[in-house]
Image (cartoon, rainbow, N blue to C red; front, side, top):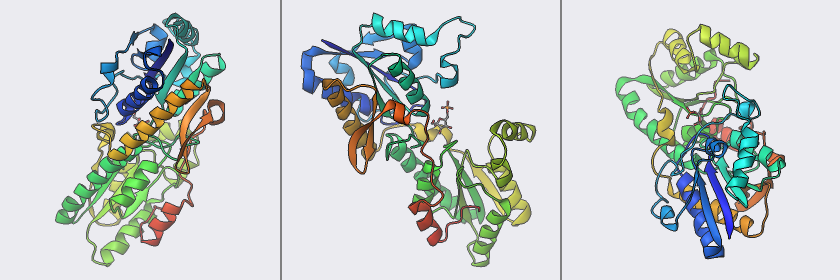
Length: 358
Ligand code: F6P
């Protein structure tokens, strides 16, 4: 009997349950009664505190289309995973101990960058780990796509679509702030898909005057409304030259968390337009996965089952060039996949007149 632990960690997203289902269905197809899935509650927190249960096959029914995660999740920041806090708990030792107590043969970790760093640490400590690529940010190194990303793009696109009608009705400039602190993939894709006129990404530091120029150009052509897609991690040229700590201090003193409202104010003062800011926030992570993400989740899950049947560990599932494959955890952990400033989609967007604030 192979005992397979599974946990979901970090920000939730549509597709987690579809992936859990894909793994379980793949395992039962390959091993039948010789496999026991062990669901670990609320991410690494459940492994630290030994909160887990033997899952029954029926638990994997009717979850393909269900948002969120049936296991629950939590954030366990990597930078504190090796720190013994006030609770005096050695988190890594506790996870290794509970892995043994649960008699796990392997552990599947569904998560993004932070999750993969801890997964790699546990792998190096001797646990049999397989990662699966989850995040709406699509910023996991080594894979073309993460599950959750395309659903968020669909939701972000719907927001921008709807904002167009109210922008046009009021001759306003509407700024839509989308999730994505380090990487701008979600804002880039939803911005292009939604027909945004300006797209502001963390990877391309912006200059407010350049944004003003783009809006004034539109106004002069009689386009009296505009939609600007802004990644929550966007920063201006001056901020991009600062260390993160200094940038956060500057923003805290200005009473800002993101730059979007500042851009809106600047436009009102210098482009003589009326603006509004819209932040869909966690809507982008809610609800049922798109058909695309259900397919990705099923492919990733089935592939993880194959890896388990072949006892291949210390790896994370990926898609490269349309093929489902895997990377070594130690090759990808701690690396982010940011939007290259010369990415083909950025070039295409510029060639159809979309501005990037630079
Ligand atoms: O990592 C995914 C993500 O949705 C980011 O895009 C966003 O900045 C962050 O999580 C929000 O974190 P939380 O759900 O903890 O507020």
